[in-house]
Length: 233
Image (cartoon, rainbow, N blue to C red; front, side):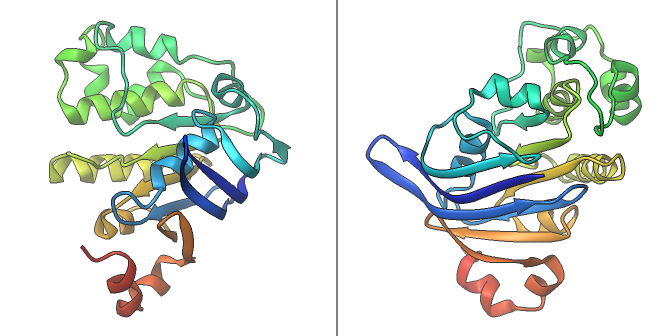
């Protein structure tokens, strides 16, 4: 579905990613784990075209997207939800969803506003509320829903649980599991292993821009030394 091949990227003269190899398979949820500053967000921004790569390749559904603009990648069916959500605060829920609308595509779940309100009942009860007057959890749900309006076959979520109350975390985790049941592939960045366990069956760990582990979440849970080395604070 999505493949990063020996990807190198950074900001100006700061080299952040070093020969990063990562795969997201159809219909799976993968957690990209690592400490703050490890390169997780850089990997997602490069994959979606917001940050140009230095070298390496990015493939999506077998198509090379390495040099495409972010809007071109989105039109191919790769969704993205930034860590800071980036909803339109002056627009209503319905208007935010309308901005994200793209045609349905073969092989991907088809989303409408009404179907999304079944997934996010709270949004359905505040259709005309402006984004700026919503809570952090509600804004996160809106950001995910707006991305789904593009009918993606895969979605990148950057720290989807950041700053959310525990009860909201539970709801967002349930949403991600439902997206998997719908057939969506999900790659999410996360620092908190406990939260990643709620949704992902496979984990990749990045440290100083290099991939240092890839395997099942069960295998990671069974290796306390590995967790201590790369994930402890």
